[in-house]
Length: 158
Image 1 (spheres, rainbow, N blue to C red):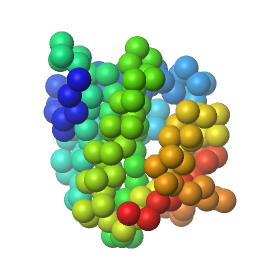
Image 2: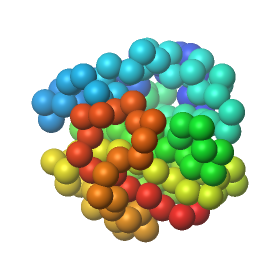
Image 3: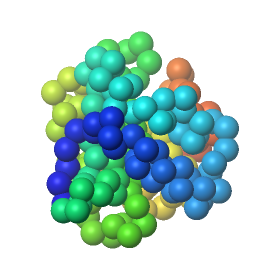
Image 4: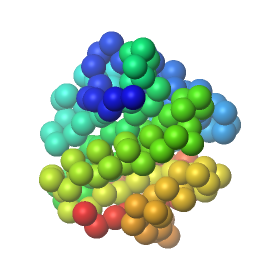
């Protein structure tokens, strides 16, 4: 397995992983990443954003099996957002989400003071991972959020 920056050739694969994951939890609803207009063109989207990147996990057979992104949150230059951390079911439980988190947070620490994220309480494995990485749960989401369906929010000082 290799973690590398996303390319245009990866767009369709990571879009399918994200959509299938959200569908599996019945989270293919408005106010989630499922309806993000840039979901089918993440490589191009992240290239256009300042201090933003998206990484994919690729197997030895060149199959994209997951990814994670970091992007500036709103208008505050000190806060980034951990975005779109998803893995294919076939590779879950192998520690890849931890590897993706390390890559994303190492990058974020070079450009931001805080990292914010939004998720759902029902995604228990994800919530547990965020706590292990030192995120603290917030009572409510930050203003400027585009994912108003989320019901769990976290912040970490970098």
